Image 1 (tube, rainbow, N blue to C red):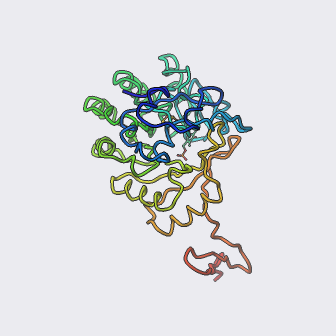
Image 2: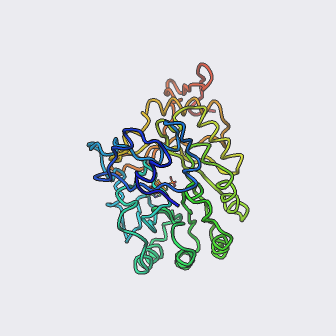
Image 3: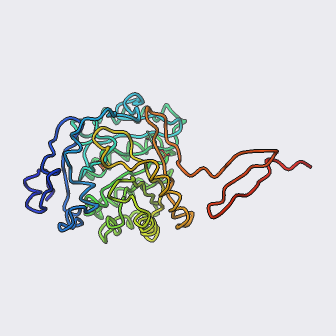
Length: 347
Ligand SMILES: *Cc1c(COP(=O)(O)O)cnc(C)c1O
Ligand code: SF4
């Protein structure tokens, strides 16, 4: 049973003042917390990281001067529910529903709202758009969470997309490994298998804290990987959840140990109602620098910002390149001092 109101939640957790005073208005997002998430929250710890991700607080209600759509997704919506912001890839929002709502959700203008599921007509239009736009090579199937759709709806969805463009790499984007690991039944996995022809599927997970990778979650992810689908993780840097280097290091290695490549570590977007969960960029850059020293190349996610006003994604890292003088580049070592590297050897 999922929890969707404060009264129910109050029976399980002793609510803090800022939690009691949350109201679902303005830039806020519905509350929905699933069983598996509840099982991960330590009720004795008022600062539990998983609790911070899912239990809303009054800080969300404080109106800010930030944006509800800083990534300009609405402006870049080309066909119903298809965001085409980068030339060669697009995102298809197949539903506004999730099994649980993350308080840091950057798409909260849409998530948990009234749009619901993609209609047959919208799906036809999206498929037509993909047919006409051969420059698109990758499509993110996202929302909301695609796996809130029923087995039959997913069968139709994947069938239509593969029929339109078998050569597109479709990314299956979900948070359900944490929010509802039981969703990945053998019959669902059969449906996915049925559509594994043409270009591969990629699995895109969101795990923000090592504790989220419990036995159930890992088992569900493994079912995809065992079928031959590579898995990647997109984490969000969140204050009080994972904004310390030990937690990030543990997350990276737990992911890698379970065959999931840490792909992105996102700096929080400037979305209304999420400011209190955002880590400062200064601290984020320090964490990135420190993490890079502690983990291997494959265990290192790319610390990334989706620039405001639809500027696109950029990788954030310590600037190691000092500059070019007299034909020589000066580059900082991550360990100590600096080194020279010639611009071009002349011979
Ligand atoms: C992030 C994003 C993508 C995928 O970008 P990658 O950097 O390839 O992971 C595609 N479309 C939109 C609209 C996005 O925001
Ligand atoms: S699962 Fe994704 S879309 Fe749903 S609330 Fe969380 S971040 Fe937003």
